[in-house]
Image (cartoon, rainbow, N blue to C red; front, top):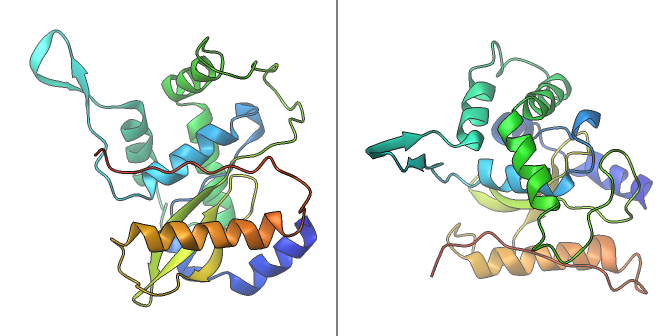
Length: 204
């Protein structure tokens, strides 16, 4: 399955993705943190402003969120635009590991008593499940479904969404992602039922 997907990846890769999409590597030092990597990919490719954390002792402002600090540190990396993608994504992964607040948040969330699943030991234990992210990316005026995975060497372009290419048409993007998951994963392993999707959406 992995070999087949890598062949598809090589056929669909666009150099523009490496320049315009924030992609980071899930480096070994972070352990089993694919959920954190996926959430980071979605948030940093959403175009949303990252708000400051309110300061309870100061009504006039707050402190920058850990994710905002991480994003700025990546942007301010010397020669970040001119580096090759492999080096840049690995550097971003290493910087995420050393953003201690994010690391702590990731670990505490996984071990929170509100979690429905018992958290395994951190490290390289094989869990049998994995998170990746899908984001809409405009390429040559059209919206494409792009997969971002910290274990993959490049973003994967799954092609244009069908129908309306308006970036505000969230239903079209959701349908396109569902089609990709069905085609690229579920159809290859039809007897498995443990596929799930979560979406980052605006608050109603």
